[in-house]
Length: 174
Image (cartoon, rainbow, N blue to C red; front, side):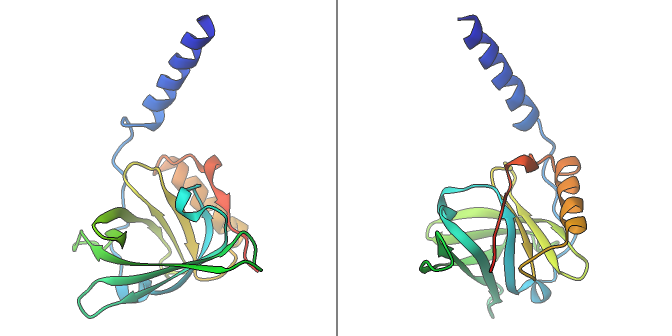
């Protein structure tokens, strides 16, 4: 019984540190959607059920005439010899002041938050999160990212955005 109480106390302490007591997630000040569109390679991500067994993940964003963005997520199933899996969706901007808060839907009527929380000035990398901090992606225009940039992103995620970066899975590309 004593061990259960200790465990529950520890769990509640953890939740208070990494749960609802966190400050609101901040996005970047502005995103030029024309510069943002194109191909991005996943460098790292939080584990999630919809990317189970994915390797070599990349995504293509295409700006539509109506202002929405077509999303094409792709990855290889289990290995680079595996089938190329694709998931098509549509994103819409929900904060027109910044263009940094979007909703993405891969099957109607369900939508998920897609917030751009870090973005290189030259759009060579982007970091995507959501308000509850359950999901996280680090994206790059290239299949690799130098360690200095990656470590700076991790530091920013930990100190400014209060993400637990130990949960990140690095993505392998060929």
